[in-house]
Image (cartoon, rainbow, N blue to C red):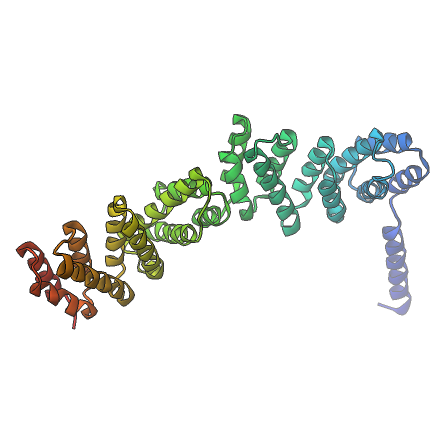
Amino acid sequence: MNKRTISLFAAVFALHSLFAQEPDPLLLSYERDFAKASLDGKLAIVGKAAVEKDTSSLGPFYVQALDFVLRNVDLLKDESALGSIAAAASGAVGDSGYAEALPMLRRVFMSSRDTAVRVASLHSLAILGKGDSQVVETLNQFLANQNNLQRAGLSPDQQSLSACIAALASLGDASSYSSLFAAMLADYPQEIRLQAEEAMRSIRGDFKKFLVEVVKKNPPLEKLTAFRAGMENPAFSAADRGELAEASLSISLGLIPTQKPELDAIADLRYSAVRELTSLRWTRATTLAVKHFYRVQTDYAKDKELKDRFIDAILCLGAMGSSEAAQALSLQLGLLNADMERSKTFDQEILLAVIGALGDLGDKVAFDYLLYIGYLNYPDSIKAAAREALNRLKW
């Protein structure tokens, strides 16, 4: 290839690049006309652009229109045409596929209280926002706010609510699960709740993680519902149930609601989680099980009606297979022995539960406490249980 040919190719390439960089004439025409037009004229121009056969080049024009709205919203807030411009441009920019509009579109959505603008913005955010964490977080927060309004007995914007759920379904981000779960359980019209349920199904990912997030983030009644959904899910493995139960116990131990319905829900969550952890022998939850045990121990001392829950806490420690659990139960047996020595009274069910749990653990830390039973005036059945537990200790 000679120098003349190379120079010719270079010239052709430069000419092509020059033309490629020239703005689209249609785009220039709209931008120019919009800049010069009155407010009503601007609205007509945006409306005309929105019905063009091919709007793929008009993305920057829609951003120009949205920028005009944001810059003049305080000055022209009473002008209905401004809201109409925002709605038309917000809806059309998504169809143009112009992803660079996302920051401006997000600002318009966050700042507007107009239903038409919100719905149009959500339409475009659903198209352009896939993979954008800021967009997803904005929509998650909007739905969470609407859910809070509903819980407070106020009336959320149902058109925007529905559009937001549809957008989250389209975006399909796992972080949306907890707010959609809350919407499914809220006192919305049935079509909204069904829409939220369908949106949850469209989200791919780890269902167990989704439920754990609900337990961590959502209100008490929703935490309990999420726990039950996991325990009743036939596709969940023992490990899935164990992780969900562990998270539920951890969260419930850290919450003390003031309202009775929420207090009851948290108590139900806590005791249900303990029973599940016992059934699974989920040893990872030892520290939580010990914390739960001491709390129930204190509560039982004040209210003997909690006896069944106290026994459940004892059995849970017996399933933990750890020295930490054995230490807590040995100390409890020491207290029971001291009561017997002093008052000659004991609760047979609780005593047998402690002895059996110590036998299950097989930790030699219990030796002296179990041995001492033989020196006290317990019935033969209790002494026999203690001997059996002693024989199960590991040395």
